[in-house]
Image (cartoon, rainbow, N blue to C red):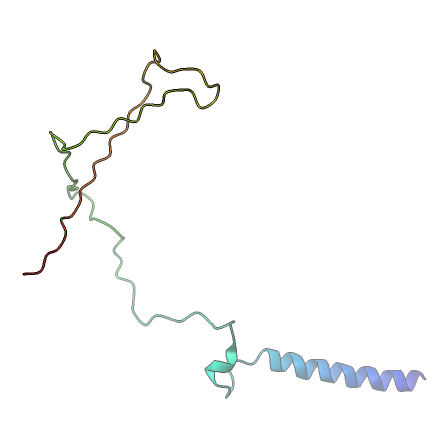
Length: 112
């Protein structure tokens, strides 16, 4: 019985080694086509070298910002009537913050 089990174990171990070898194969180390790699594809390697420059504007260069309009066409004030937490009126409450938003709308394109 021990001899039979030892033979079966050796057979199973050789089969496991064969299957593990198949799992390690991909299109880069065998003659398999790239489509057989599945979803675990290796990351593509870029042939372009690094330039050494960082992203964004060069240091020391002045930034450019859209200037705020002095006289806007429409001013909207959003003033709540009651407190969202307790429900009390906010008629005499002091203003604690303000935010500006400037929306620039591009005119519609017309055909000539």
